[in-house]
Amino acid sequence: MYADIAFQQKIGDQETLCYKVPKTLETSIKEGQLVNLTLRRRTATGLIWRLHDEKPSFKTVDIKEITNETPLLTPDQIKLANWISEYYFAPLFKVLKLFVPAKIFKGKTMKPRIKEKPIPEKLNLKNLTIAQKNALDTIESAEHKSSSKTGAKVTPSNKFLIHGITGSGKTEIYLHLAKKHLDNNEQVLILVPEISLTPQTVEYFESRLQIQAAVIHSKLSEGEKYKTWLDIKTREKNLVIGSRSSIFSPFTNLSLIIMDEEHEFSYKQDQSPRYETHKVAEQILELQPKTKLILGSATPSIETAFTYQDRTLTLENRIGNAKLPQVKTVDMREEFKKRNKSIFSDALQSKMQTTLDDGKQ
Image (cartoon, rainbow, N blue to C red; front, side, top):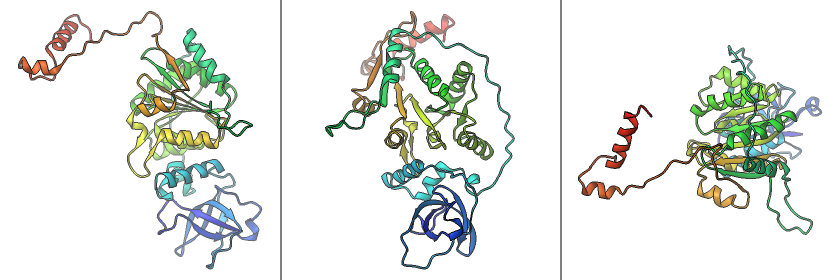
């Protein structure tokens, strides 16, 4: 038996290196496990990427030992990492860093000093409007079908776009969906575009669901990343809220992905490995068809609006008696003719001054 090993460091032109599996490890070794081995005359840590019986043309070195019984990555996560590497032309060692924190990959243990914030005071779920309930029922009753008996392609119904104006209650639909899946002991991922939105989103969901969320964003310390990763891997926390990188969390039973404000540019990673969160989420659904993806926005991107045109749920009214603001368009060319070279039109300056004089924002 042989094993292709992946590393979190560049190892030349190859993505993986081939090692021999000793007879003593053949019954216990699995893809996704960490192992110790010799690399350039030093002991190094690598991850079992693929097991096979294809004898290479060169002499191989034996794997020394397995360092953890439980695989760090599931077979689906390995497939997802391979897809990202191929689709985005990204080196595998960089992709692997998205999925596993460096401290965990190196087999190091940490005792991070993290003080868990108490769950906010309980707030009840709000009653849904007819439009919200119809959207919720459509999503919950949908079943994924990849093909029909005749072989004709059937539109998958495990992903939806909620196109709702600001204040129409999209978040409340997310909340009811999350509750159902969490009550079934399934994992739920809530994606938000900016770190600044994370605290209010966490408080909103924790106060109503009365469970602690695992929070992920780029500002976490190494210790916080370590603990959060383990909390998700061990199912200590089933609700995950975070920015784009949280989609690579070590889920073992992910059933719902919600991407709020899907139109935001921050869902695109602009450094290698570059990726678009939408594409990664949809690839997860390809690997795990029972998972559902919900995109939400008041102003969907053109690509999303077109792709999801037959799976769009529309919310046209604000909750309660809230009314949309009146909008007036000003032609700034006319302002230049009046010798107004400010970035504000005369009409806007007048309305701003009136609002401030009234003690409003």
